[in-house]
Image (cartoon, rainbow, N blue to C red; front, side, top):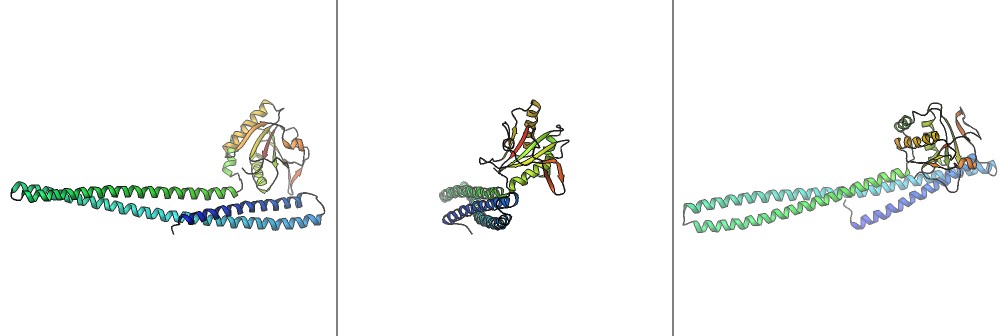
Amino acid sequence: MILTPSEVASIATWSAFWEICEYISEAVVFLGCVGEFIAEYTNVRTEQWRHALGRRSLIILTLGIGAGLFSLIKTNALAGQVIGSLGEQAEQAGKKAQTATDISNTALLRSGQAATASVDAASKASKADVSASSALTLARGARREADSFEKDIVTAKKQAADAESHLAEALERAVKAEAEIVSVRLRVADRRITPAQQSAIRKALAAWIGKSLTIQLINLDGEIETFAVDLFDTLRVMPDWSIAMSAVTTPSGLSGTIIRLDPSASAIDSAFATNLVAALHAGGIDAKGPIETIPRTILGGGPWWHSGKFNEEGPRYEKDAGRDVKVHIEIGKKL
């Protein structure tokens, strides 16, 4: 079904509405995650109160995820209607172009027939002067018909050009609609590091042996933790590397990934930090830096877990691990 302009405007309005619903759902999910974090990782108030908070946060988290998925389904459905309408418009434009081509071919055929009739009339005029006047009249009539056919050809070509223009516009709209769908899916997807990306990063850092660094998770949430664990697993297998990781809460927050270099770092540390940024770029990660500043974790302290201290129950905390490290990776929320 081809959508009217008013229907397209209505779909655009509903698409904006459901997109806002997605943002609200993500905010609800964030609140649920905060409640889960407080319930699981803090000693606020009593254990019974934290248990109740955890249950309510789980309900809020479930409702937020469900609402987000429903909003995403609605957004995709509306985009599907627009794409279907554009497809039908493209099909009609193609039919019009084919019709115009057929008319053009018919006009050319009739023009050829008219030219043949004109030649025949001239032949008859040369054979008999008596029929010259009649042949001249026929020739003039044929010429007028040929002129008419030429006008039909011009009109047909213009119609074909218009049809091609409409088809191009329809295809462009379809491409934009598909790009919007991809953009929506990317906004809700977590950052992950694929095995191919891990291989590219390790290859770019193969020359460094026995290096130490920290990974700091700024304002930790589930998406940040997933991405940080992927990066931690990528680097921990490097030869004799020592990696410490901690979670830090700060009002200013952070977006993306930043490499920080301690002001007291040596030239070798600086070269390593620069190479680390390039390696992350080689793995398709948009990392910034290196920036010479004191990392937040050294200013604020806090619990650490270290690449060399794992057991079956998970990482052991080391309060002072990484204090003498000069290169730090900070991971904030998704850009």
